[in-house]
Amino acid sequence: MKRTSLAAGIVLALAILAVSWGAILVRFCGSAPLVVAFYRLALATALLVPLALVPAVAAPALPSAASARLVFLAGLFLALHFGAWISSLSYTTVASSVVLVASQPLFSALFSGRILGEEAPARLYLGAVLALAGTAIIMGGDSVRSGGHLKGDLLALAGAAAGSGYFILGRRLRREMPFFRYLLFVDGTAALLLGLAALASGESLAVPRGDLPWLFLMAAGPTLVGHGSFIWAVRRMKVFYANLAAFGEPILASVYAFFLLGEPLRPTWCVGGALVLGGIFLALPGRARAPLESPAGPEASPPGGRRA
Image (cartoon, rainbow, N blue to C red; front, side):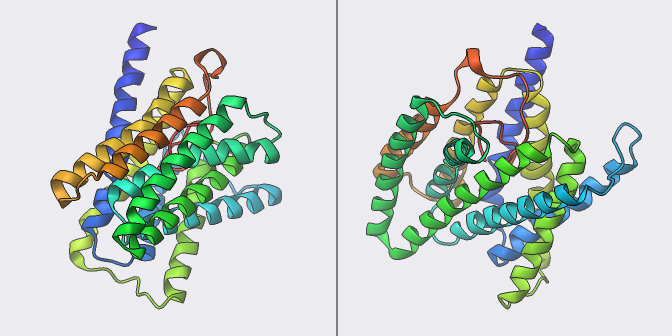
């Protein structure tokens, strides 16, 4: 048991390390946000296809008609999530973007009460109020700097809300579809929608050669290694511990941005970010009530966990 817990902890640390590079890799790319989002999911889908040939993995049979509709909706929410969040990085800082999109678990918990009939505890609403106060401080500080920063903050919040829609639909679909089959169909749908959106907005899907390494790293690292590691770990440890990963990405990504991109951590971000992360921590389910298993969300989100 101790050996299993140690292995799960190591894999969870690997997941946090992988997903925390997502925003930095986006910044390294020169392509338009929708194009970056398209390739992130298209390449991840391509990497998932060979898994269908592994005997231990179920073949990707087509979902039923009812499930197909939910797959499309989940893919739409996932496309909106990545499209909005990656676009936010063109306007605001990495630190503001990642801490605001980390509020996704709060949206999931609030919406799932109405959609899935899951009763939300009082601490959830208290945590949401605390996180909302932190969001207001971050956005207030960014609005003083420029209107563009505020637009980026709003896009990050839109990405969090869309991610919660994907997460809620994913809970339903994961009851019927194996993990890799679910990822293959939903990621593929999202990639298709993002590609069409990029073309409709006048963007070309041709990317500079220099972007290709970053796009492959984004698909293989934050998307597949990060996502897959979260799912592996959450089946072997209490979800409460996996939920603590919600704190990992904003902190690590902000540190990376400080050293690699020269983005300062302003006082308003430090105060607001502490309130947002504190609100998420307060809203997390208690250890005694946390189940041992959970369906996936964006970027490997366990219930109440972080965004992918």
